[in-house]
Image (tube, rainbow, N blue to C red):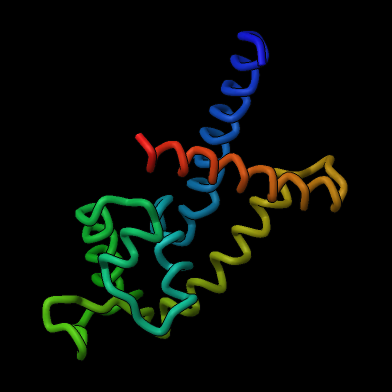
Length: 147
């Protein structure tokens, strides 16, 4: 890849990332959520209860950031925390009924955002794009772990 191609690729990825995050923030605001909180809630929706450490790892966030998000969501009654029965040092986090209802609304927002993002692409291209983006993410993850 020459310099011009590298610049064009990196610029496209950067702009997509910035605009996608900004649009997500717009769509999540009416739900009272900031970007990042929805990812935490979606992660919790896949498990009955999980530790804050597991959430931090799966979200790729620093533990203090996850703690702040959880505190805010807990204050709203969206999640609850409690001690792990198997490890008294660990804190488990789970969705409340209100949290599960909010996850449904987040799903609607995510579908809208995905539809807006791939407007103009046919279904096959949109599916291929998702795979390509995951490959790129894996490439960065692999490099990050090596260095």
